[in-house]
Each structure stands twice: as C-alpha cells, then as structure tokens.
Image 1 (cartoon, rainbow, N blue to C red):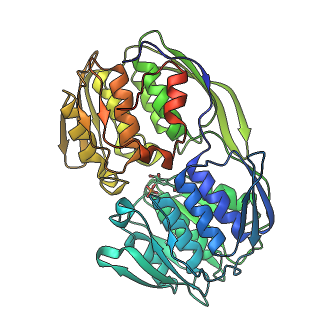
Image 2 (cartoon, helix red, strand yellow):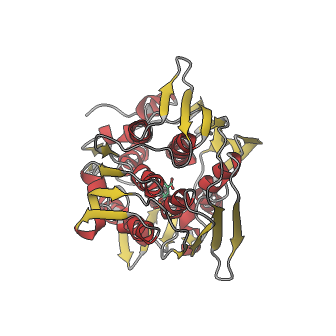
Amino acid sequence: MADRLSGTCRVPGDKSLSHRALILGGLAIGRTRVTGLLEGEDVLATAGAMRALGAGVTRQADGEWIVSGVGIGGLQEPDTLLDMGNSGTGARLVMGAVAGHDVTAFFTGDASLRRRPMARVTEPLSRMGAKVVAREGGRLPLALTGAAAPMPIIYASPVASAQVKSAILLAGLSAPGDTTVIEPLASRDHTENLLRHFGATVTSTPTNEGGRRITVTGQPELKAGDIVIPGDPSSAAFPAIAALLLPQSEITIEGVGINPLRAGLFETLHEMGANITFAKRRIAGGEPVADLVIRAGALKAVTVPAERAPSMIDEYPILAVAAAFAKGRTAMHGLAELRVKESDRLSAIAKGLSDCGVTVAIEGDTLIVEGKGGKVRGGAAVASALDHRIAMSFLMLGMAAEKPVTIDDGATIATSFPGFVALVNRLGGSIAPA
Ligand code: S3P
C-alpha cells in the first residue's frame, strides 16, 4: 500500500482523438501530422486497419505520426482480416468509414470485442446501403461490404453513443447531401470537431428533448491538417483518484483534455468535495486543455444523474472506487451502457468492490455504493475480464486500502495506458508484479 503520491506527470494521448486522427487523416487529401498520438494497442489496431485500407500511417523517430490520406472514396479493399483487438471504438468507426466505400472488409477482435454488440452500427450502416454478414446478435467476426452509392439518412439513435454517431457521420462523408444523427443525450463531439478542422461542414444543435442533432454534408474534400492530441482525461482519472484517496498527496497532471462532454467525472468529484483545480487552461489542437492539480482530502457521497453518464461513461469504475472511500451512500444512475463495454462493467465493479469488503447493490441500471468514510478493507484477487479500466481501478483501490489487491491480468492495461504502472510508481505508488 502506498503512502502518498506527489509530483508532476503527463498521461498518454487521448484514445478517442487518436483513433479519429488516424481515420480522418486516412480519409483526407494530403499528409496529416499527429503529435501526442496514444501508442496503446487499441490505437495501433486502428493504425493497422487504416494501413490495410490503403492509407499511409507511419511513426517518425521523434514520436510524431504521419498519415497520408487517400481521400474520401479512396479506401482500397484490405486483403487481410482487420483485427481490431480490444477496441470497440476502432471497430465501429472503421466500419463507418468502410461503409461508404465499395469494398469488402472482414472485422474481428479479441474475446472481449467479439462479445460486444455491433448491430447498433451495422443496422444504420445497412440503411445507408452497406451489406453486413455477422454472427448472431450482430457480433464479430463480421463481413462488411460498403455501398457503391451510399444514401444519406436521418437516424435517431436509441443510445447516446459517440461510436454510433461517428460511424454514421463517417459513412455520411461518402453520401450525397446531408446525413443526420439525433442522439438522446449529447455524447463526446471529437468527430465533429475534427471533421470541421479538416474542412467539412458539420452542424450541431440541441434538441427539445435534451439531446443533439448533428448533420454532416457529404462528399466534402477533407484537407489534411496537423493534429495535437491532449492527455486522455479517462487515463488521468486513475492517478487523480489515487491522489485524492492517499492522505497528504498532491500531484499535477499536465496537458489533460477537459472537453465538457468528457468532463463529467471532474464535475462529480467537485460535488464530492474533491480538491481538484484546472490550472493553465488553454486550447490545444482545437480542444480545451488544463493542468490538473489534485490534493488529497475526504470525499462525501453524491447522487450522479443519468444525464451525466455520456460525459463520464468510461469513468464509473474508478468513480465507484472513490465512492467506496467516501462518506455516505453514492447512487449512480443510467448505467445500462456499462453492461456492453470491454466487460460487463456493472457486474465487474460490483463483484470487485464486494470482494474488497464494500457493500454494493445494482438496482436496474443504478449502482449504489455504501461508502466507508475512510479506508476500504481490500485484500481481494480481482478478475479484470480483459478490461483495462477494471484492472486499473482495482489497482488504485488496492494502493489506498488496508490490504493489497491483486489483479489476474495486467496486460490489458496496455490497450489504453502504456506505462501506467511505471507512471503511478514514479509518483509514489506501490504497484508490484504479483
Ligand atoms: C468512445 C465512446 C464511448 C466510450 C469509448 C470511447 C469514442 O463509447 O465508452 O471508450 O471514442 O467514441 P460509446 O460511444 O459506445 O458510449
């Protein structure tokens, strides 16, 4: 168990933006230079897929990446399987890009990805003219033949998912006229921002029901442009919460993206009484960025409304850890989507916390955590279920608990946060090989 965390660090580049930089760079005309790309396995799988589709994707000696785009309509048929590894974002967004091209591609992934629902994207992509043959439940492996003449659609998505929205917008790039997605709650808008950065016309307006209506005008010429990727707020969340929980800690995480549609965790932590400040706020690469300064302190329970879920959808595992140490009962509403992430996160969080001596309940799609108002017992062996965020969350719990926690598989962390263990230990953490 660690004493306290202190010092300054930077977390790897934003995963969502990294996927999009490679895909949109591949669809643009010209060379896109990407600084700060996340070199995690998920993003490297997307790099491989874009290469197989004909884009030039190379890493320079200085760590910058160059994407040589083929232009919309220019993707070629891959002569090999597209193995998207663990990445739902990579799989679904690349499917969207392929759906607007007259080529056939075969998608697969690891055991976790092969369990995840793909019909949420293949169904609207089929309406645009793509043909899909998938396993039962629309699961991978699947074959997708893009439309020779894709049709623009207006699609009211039943889920607030940036992946669904992005897949349709990417296919819509090849269609004549306007393609529109209506989402029930606003999800992260990185695709829209980057499309505009590359010269496409994208409008986004609030709906009366609290969601958004996003329209892309098809067949633009995307012009390559440089992209600077900020640190991933979803990765920063792990050391940030460890610093809140370990008494006397004070850390700074530099250059973290604080896009409001990603910042729900920080809003929630502020409501819990956390001492987190955003220093040196600036715009970098079109996204708001700040240095996060985090100081340890007691947390109190909070109710997290369902409407906030899309802006912190990946942060519930680590928020649940914070809630376990907070004083009082925390209720997190609207978590149905957690069942279809890299693992069934609702079950994985509840099982892990309960094994660590915390009282938890799942009521419908609400997660309830009875906070200890102090140290959690810990002492469990937690199954990470091929889920990087479950693995990292319980390692953070173990550092602040009375007894250490072991996880069965740390390899999965490399999908999103290469160097995680070394970074946390440099700050004073205590993660050791089992
Ligand atoms: C992502 C969107 C979210 C998130 C995922 C990354 C993206 O998924 O969980 O880690 O980059 O678009 P959904 O859009 O399916 O909720």
